[in-house]
Image (cartoon, rainbow, N blue to C red):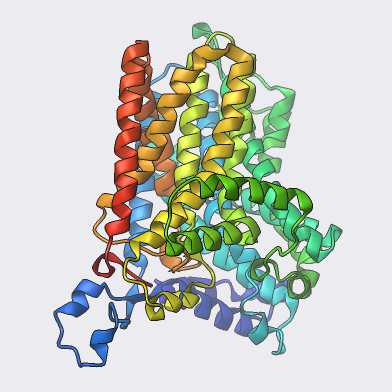
Length: 568
């Protein structure tokens, strides 16, 4: 794949030379980046090494640390296939509802822009701000513009592949329903929409890095991610709400509204709508100019004005390599309070050590916050809907509760990831007989640090809205959340806290699996909850049973041996 991409890139050598980029350096940098992305180094499963003969020296270690080179394209391919399948399912849902061509296209393009930005935020934002190669590049005669273009192309290649997977289902259904040219126009429009999405997100980040000092930038970027996620969700809800039309208007071209000029999905929906209905007026000509010229002008703007200082700014930011060591008096009081709660439970020295290690890292590590905190932004949106929509209070309540379950389960997964994963060798040389105790301490830290405060906040919000009637649903949801997390004890192998490489290219795109759980798994559990909660006694009995089972399963973590621990 790397050779094909570079061969295709060579055809546009003249373009990069004309915009002032050193193409030879650009090609060399991009080739190395792509090779790193498509190759991974994995430590073999200990069970595989147990079958091989061992020397007496090797027997002192719990498992072998053999490293093998393995291609990651299979995982990326699986992720792309999942997104393509979901694209077909979404297309079937959209086109099965009677509505205008414009509204169908508007929903398609809105979905595409949401997914592009979702992948950008979840997987590829760190590509722009990864300064690990600064030591090599800044000591060479490579200008900042070339460094910027290499990062941008690196991002666009993999983001473009995922975008194509998201668009293929919609394009095929559009081609079958409205003609081949509509499907082709849709794919071309999606490529422009991808450029716009990258411009908005990367332009915002780089613009902020220019306005604020490096230390401040490291703090506000997390809140920018939360705000960006919330804005995307609100925008998606707004456009969905504007798509309601009467039956008599289904076969007519859409009317122009002012907000269409401020929504890129509406531009491309109007362009294809004008092709289908053969409409030619100055409004649609404006949308054609916006849809074609804006992405090009946006990339020229960011390349000309923001790229020149990009590499130098990264040197001072050191964004992903720093840890927030500032500890305010309020944070100390909060930590003391939760430490007192932790002391109420019986625990070993190993559990206590793991608890304090995980607590300290998740409190101070900016990269952990960046991976975990942006997902909390949607809770604000659900809370607003919960208070404003009086007709569907039950549904909105369950949406808040089970989105909380999803968020907490995602946060639990993050405690195994780290940029300093190589330091996990310390686990192997320490006299640890039961590594499962490390997992118990880690889970307990997450429960006290995140689950307890978050449910206290949510319960308070719901009590102010509904009174004590909501407590049975909260109780059942808490038990489901704990069981959902504890049930992973049945896995064949486990990781120790912060022992997995967070930046491994094999993980790129895996956030889509979480999105799949959010779309399908959580709604199914919420639907079951809805029917269970119709009776108070049944809710209390099932919630209590789930809680007891979860406690028993958490206790089983203590008995996990080294044979079930996998290290990478």
